[in-house]
Image (tube, rainbow, N blue to C red; front, side, top):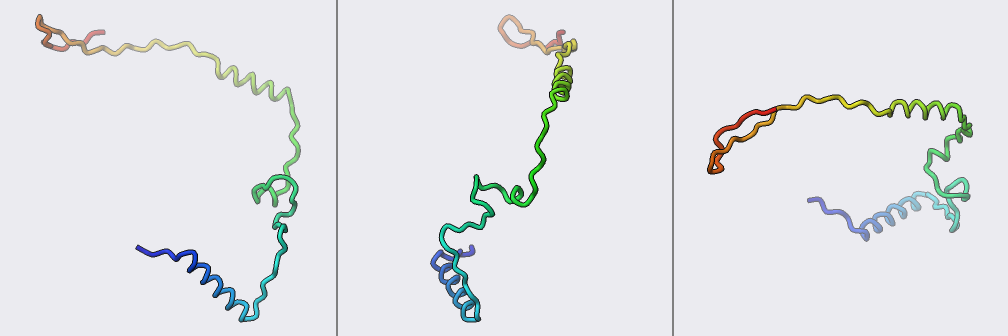
Length: 108
């Protein structure tokens, strides 16, 4: 089984990589505390799709259309008359005087 590196090993590896980066002329920019990568700190955090996509237009409530849709759904939910099902014959045991099964009969 493969051994996972400990957190100490990971920290040491990251420190080594950062040291190599700075030794090659790289620069680390400092970000002040409290600064966020969000565009606006107003309101709750939303998914990325809502940040980059334009908001959809406001919806207009049309009572006539809603009433027609509700009426149609009521018609679709109208109770149907139950169909008479054909009763399948049942297999019934025939017992003797001692309670033992003699034979099976099919009855409607």
